[in-house]
Image (cartoon, rainbow, N blue to C red):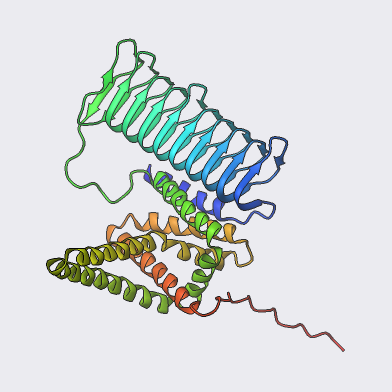
Length: 399
């Protein structure tokens, strides 16, 4: 089972990373596909607010703060954002990572969700399975397949034609709930199955396993998609607001990988020492003058937050560097998409070996941070110029 899932992830990577010559690439603060507009290619969008009211005859891959789909996507929809609402029709699969997700239209295949709050509206019809991980999941519509999810709270009001197999803290089946198959849930608490709820198969509660969980993901495809969509949120967002930073730091990493590694190690150690010194000085200053000590503590918190922010974003230049190597002539968004797809695949694969996976992830973070620092150092006086590709050699013509 895991081998088959892994092979699916590999195939998905090459599909996502492959250059699409006729693809439609858009990036702006606000991007809209109007109600009378038809996109006859795969659509790639990075921006602040994205709205699709028209028709996309292909896959749509979007990273934005707010995404609203009221039109039709004749393909799959891949979204990473803050708030995502899908009220239109999608003939393929829907894969979303967001803080708030709402599905209100028809989906031809599976729905994979990662988010804080997810709702499948009453009018929603999902043709495949519903899978993913959320804080709260509310199902009001119809799921043709199974529900395979992990969540803090799951409330089922609608219909699941297949089975429900979930890991959950609180599971509620309301009087209107209908499950065609089994209900199997892993939880420390008994589910609330209210009178009137219909279950076609058996009901089983399983105790959560004690002790640490395995570092090997149970479903590599889910892990891969979740990591990829998260990378797209970071990368497309940073490309939209600071494209020179992303491209420049990636170019620094490609040209000077060892220097970036060394600078990354030095910056991590240096920032740690700086935070410790600020805390110590703050403690001493507090004993002498309370307000002065508070200033040093505040500075330490600011440095620590900046350090954490750089760590979070440090995978972006690594993915962009990979993308530039694979697709040197592609646009920034497409190159980053290819690099992120490949990097996520490598991280998921090495995750099967706990020590190797952890070391590789640490290496990515350190090299990415080093690339940021080197870029900032080299642009302190003048803008950084990305190296242009070498010109092809001249071909001698016969006399």
